[in-house]
Image (cartoon, rainbow, N blue to C red; front, side, top):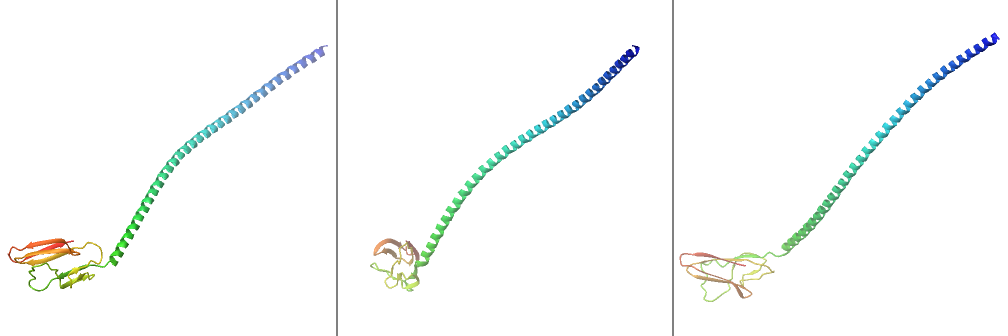
Length: 217
C-alpha cells in the first residue's frame, strides 16, 4: 500500500514536472513566435513604408512630367504661332518681291523700248547762218530767210534752197535765233505750214550794235 502511494506520488511529481516543462516550452515557443511575428510585422511595415515612398515618388515624378508636358505644349503652341506669323511675313515679302520684279521687268521693257525708239528715231537738229556779208536788208516786204551757211543738219530736215524746215517725225522742236542790228527795226515771224505761230520784234535805239535772241518751240 505504501509502495503504491509512493508510486502515485512519484507519478504526480513527474506529471507536475512534465506540465511545468510543457508550460515552459510553450512559453518559450510563444515568445519566439511573438518575436518572429513582431519581426515579420516590422518587415511588413518597412515594406509598406517603402512601397508608400515609392508610390509617393512615382506620383511626384508623374506630376513633374505632366507639368513639363504642359509647359512644352505651351511653348510648342507659341512656336507654332510665331512660325505662322513668320510664314505670313515671308509670303508678304515674296509677294512684294514678285511685284517689284514685275515692275522692274516692266521698267526694263520700257527702257529697252525707249532705247529702240531712240536708236531707230532719226536725230533731227540743224545750225545755220545767213552770210558773211555785213548787212542783210532792209526789206520792204516779208521774205523767207534762206540760211546758206549750214554748220550741222542732222536728218537733212532743213532745206537751204527753200529755207524751210520739214519735220521728219512728230514731236516738239525748239528754235533759237540771233540777230545783230544797228538803228533799225527787226521783226521775225515763225510760220508753221504757212501760218504764223510766233512773232518777235526788236528795235535798236541807235547806240551801236545790239544782239537779240529769239526762242520758240
